[in-house]
Amino acid sequence: AKLTGSQSFSYKFQRLLPGTWLFMTGDKTPVIIGVGRITQRGKGADVATAKGPIALMEAAVRRAAADAVRGAHLQSQDLLSRVDSVSTVALMMEERVPKQHRPLYRNPAFALAQLLGAKPGVRCAVSYHGGDKPQVLVNDLAEHLSNGHCHVGIVAGGECLDTFMRASKLGRAPGGMQVRDAIGREVGSQQSSTSGPLAWGDVKYGDEPHIVGNVERQDSKQEAIHGLGSSQKKDP
Image (tube, rainbow, N blue to C red; front, side, top):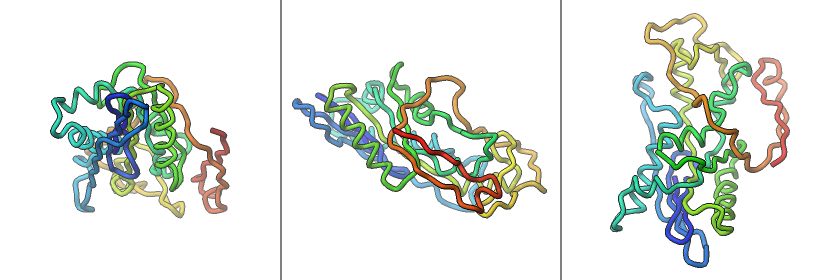
């Protein structure tokens, strides 16, 4: 996660589960002022206590905030309360979610902003999938900072596909959905859990996120057969 800002500070979060804060100088040059990262390990870990993608991003962001204020006369939550832009990388986990249940997170940036206690009206942006998309979000935030459209920003990303698939095999997929693996096989269809489904999913309010970047993706034959493809073709 990364933090970036204008005039006094700001931040952004980078790829996977890192965190970084950016600082904007007097001439509105974006500067990274804090970074954070968290990794959730252990295939034997209880899926009931495992963090979801938004919670993992929150943890990385808070580490970035602590890194940003180290040695300064400012509390990390004070910095987080000044955030006016939150950007997140699209979740690859969504590719395993059946079409009728997509998206599991309509606006992950907004869900993250709520957990962080960001100010009302915070700008929320989400990228498409792709190896360059963390950098695309960084560039997008830097442009908004230099133009004075925001002053403190976050770029974050997080994945927990392993936890998601393990929960699905135990019959605990979010919302009780039927999930397929990468080659189209149903998982968890013969199992049931007394613990109930994972309480993952987007918040029920908030505007649609600003979409950054574009996607030109053609579903594979195997994806089309098993209903796994996204069939998306959108402009920025």
